[in-house]
Length: 129
Image (cartoon, rainbow, N blue to C red; front, top):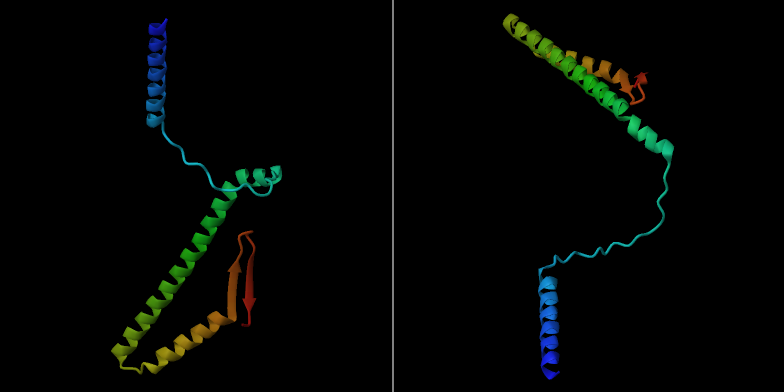
């Protein structure tokens, strides 16, 4: 009987050794330290607006980009005209003071009229500023 007990001890030791090896090879996971606070609410209308609003938001981005592109084109055209006028005046030998006066007048005109476009598609023109 004594021999049987020794065999059982060996098997128990073997089992313990296997468990220890398995624990060593297991991946240790990081425990989260964040605390859960408050409650989560679900609004189906907001979810539907978000899910179906991709096209709308994309179109507003396109409109905004188009208006910015138009402004850049307008500015480039204005600068090209000014450069053309300057070179023409330099060829004729006229003063550069006239150019500065024209630039100031154009700036005043731009300040008088200001246009704003909103995401909802409404554009507002403010004159007299």
